[in-house]
Amino acid sequence: MFASYQRVIWSGFALSPALTLLLLPDQVVNVALKQFGPSVILALAWVVAFGAAHFSRHAIDSRAERAAPLLSLSALRHPPAEMPDPQDIRQSLRHILQSPPPVTSPYGAAEPETLDYALSRAVERILGSWGKRKLAELTREELQELWMLEQLVRATPDRAGALAQSFVNPDVVLEIRDRIAAIGQHRHAYEAQIGAFEATRRAWSDAAGGPPDRLLLTALQALDRPDPDLWHKVIVEHDPADPAQADAALWCARQPSCERASVAHFLAYAAADGRIEAAARRGDCLWLQGLQDVIEGWNARRYAGRSLGLTPPDAVATSAPALTAALDRLAEITCTPRLADPRGIFAEYRGRAARPRDHWCLATGRLQAPPQIADYVEPADIHAA
Image (cartoon, rainbow, N blue to C red; front, side, top):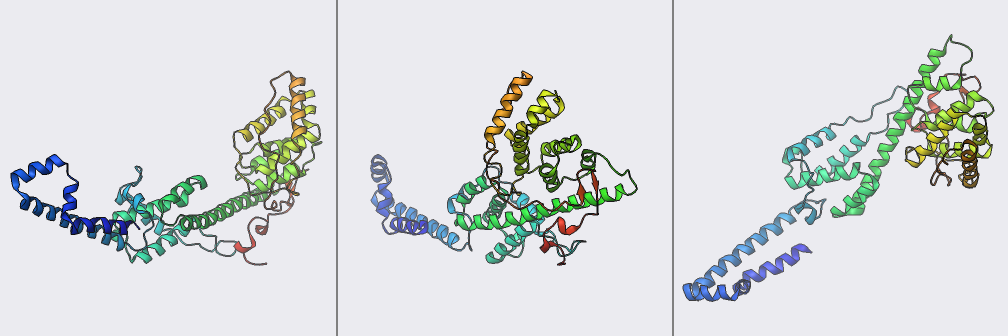
């Protein structure tokens, strides 16, 4: 569309030199006619017109020769101020294209792809559509397009939506971004579960020949990798009448890696069973400080995990009045400022079920059996049983 308008406008200049004169102020034209005469002015007009036509043809042709451009013409003409130099972009692309492919894990099938490897495959396909085999062949515009694509892929959803408007086909690049992001999320979840499995396996080895029983909190703190599925099990299944298990559940709820659904369950049931008022009456300052930390952490958006759900999803949806009343009583009993209600916590939680952690005994704080890899990662990521 833009090229068509250009062709009409500049062709008009080329075919009608007088149109060029119309763009000049009247006094300039009158002075020029008196000093040089009409023939000289007409000749200059033809030169300007032909020059404009040549420039137009070059601009149109260079745009037409671009193979499958990603960015709109406006975005190409106005690159972001933070865009690196071409050499730095080439170096970044070189690093992406060197991303290793998935390898076979010690536990079974090939590991899931990384986000960088998925991005490298997308870049390779774009280079192929452009007929480019080396990064050195890329023009400044092409480097700008690939840099913008990388920014979009790595951006948050909100920023990705804004960046997509710079592309010729926003919906297409957003779909690419979503697919690559899903690959990255799967890989991140896989690595987190493998880390939890390895940490639990080390705990099993360290426990051999150790004391028969120990505090559950001590066992959880000994793990050197977070395990949100285990935190969820402790919160949902612990016995609040057992001080050791109650302390462990509070500790789990305070962990930044704890899932949002787990935190909501903890606060809902702490209010429902009178635990908050009981702690206030016995003066349990440490437990109450932990409760405050959980609520303030929620309101500060400390908890980012959204993969776990509850059964049923609305299990805590009606718990707000109970917690509000419990916090009112807490302030009255302790004569302290009332804690703020956690905002938006009691909603529906849809997501996957927590992975099995039945090899843990909450009463004794010990592992009853070695961890099994099938309890930690997706069946597709290990050999079929």
